[in-house]
Amino acid sequence: LALPLSGAGSSYSLLEMTRADALINASAFGLEGLHIGSGMAFQPTCINIDIDGITDSEGVATELGGGLYAMIPENESEMSPLLHFLQYDCTGRLPFADHSVKWIFTEHFIEHVPVEGAISFFKEAYRLLERGGTLRLS
Image 1 (cartoon, one colour):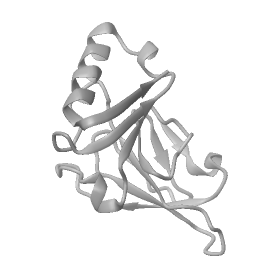
Image 2: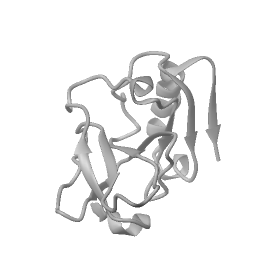
Image 3: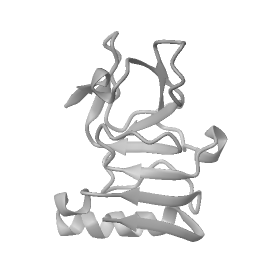
């Protein structure tokens, strides 16, 4: 499933920032956290991750397991923040180094995955969070 970006409130173009097989360094993009199961509720201070993809106005679409994309506002006069999106299955290993993020936020995600997937997610969150990091789950 690929959702059109116009539903995000503005028109965006997608720009691939990393290859599919590369480890992503969130801090290299000035980002400290992950928003797991973001859907269309994109946040500007993190990498938004969802199993469902997105498509921009020109038909460029993300791919499951693909690289990190920047969402560039098409209207240059907009003061919209740069957003980042990764289409990924968050019940498996994510493409980030150990202890590489300060926080992970998710809401209305964990209840939609099987128990084995939830256990895998919690193990992965532990692997990804830096010492003293925060997992916010609701």
